[in-house]
Image (cartoon, rainbow over all chains, first blue to last red; front, side, top):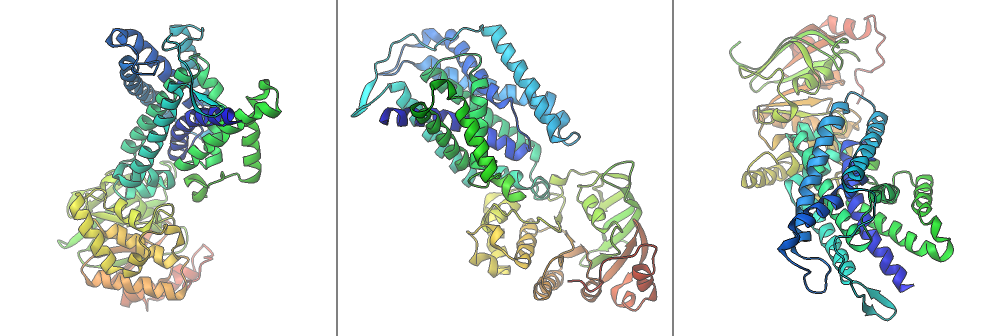
Length: 301
Length: 249
């Protein structure tokens, strides 16, 4: 039981990091971006590419399976994933924003996600891989609970990022502008805020968090080209559960989805694990269409 | 006239280029004046101030502020050009606190100046200070209007444009909001506002423009227009059966 709780929180944390970016872009750009999950895969593989280039820089640090190459690789992956997100926005979404309806953008995002997934498959191949072949020994954390140092690191980093993002949104002018833009774009412009600049930063933050989520997934599970494809439903479930545009909501939503998946194996055959977020999503849409904690999009209605 | 702050000449504008709502509107607002625009529904009153604010594209004509052409200036640069605009509905960020609403309005200013201006805003509107850390969604319609005024005044604009500040307010709230407007005007702030409440608009403004069907009809000092028989003709004798009551609060 305790082990399921820990596994659930870990996968919940990774889902939460992805869902934060998704909920931000959904809240601010007002469309469901199915390509967001591919940013996670892209980030994970960009870090892998960087690790293979930077490998000689150092071995594992302390009890962890990774060292300086992966840390630098993650930073590079954040940059490269932001670049991909901005490129997609410039080439596809910006062209469609304003002139076409939301459904067009959603379908365009489907196309983009296929394109990115196939590109990754083409470059890196379809086989599952790892950042490092170092064997890790799980350490006992509590009676009946063993965790690997990498898993503890992933949890800690996710927690720090969530808190940092929350403070950023509450305290800084850019964070304030992002929250304002999610509620009312015209009024935000009227207040002298350049919405193009805020949208750019929204992509950079969402893509960077997606890249980190991808690296943490690769570190604690494994790297596969279909990582994003498998995460898309949990991400949407978490974002919608939390209320579109609501950051703390996305975090709690991610935790609920992660824990539900982990505990579902006690009552459902493991093959049905994928269906759990879908069931949660259906239940939430049925009972509270604006999410458990109404976000900006819900409040604006 | 040399004293004109805002000059609008022959503006043709609409949400879609092939469907203009304004067919060559012209008006002038002088420094320190309170000017209102009235007219039946569909006259293009709100469209004009949205067009001036850069939210509706202008296809022909010219908008000048203090001699500078601002016809096609982007909306987010209007503040720097000294134009403030308060929309009719959704004029505050309900998911942000009152203090955050004000901080957003001052986001373009240097930090220390922003702080001073927000302190001044709380002095002018003490009711806002009492709720500063509450979400703006708890405010009443009249309080929201005051918050919107306070926020748009932070940049000390030369021109304040208001879209139907009395819409949806109780009679008591209307007199409070209009009382503040008169104070702002007395402080020398130039105001251009659209109003449905014709009687109240004529009572507090210096001059009034009457629009109908996207064109200028009549204009003049508000006191004179109040007794003008043409006013009644435009409102009640036109081709359109107007659904709005001139005294609607």
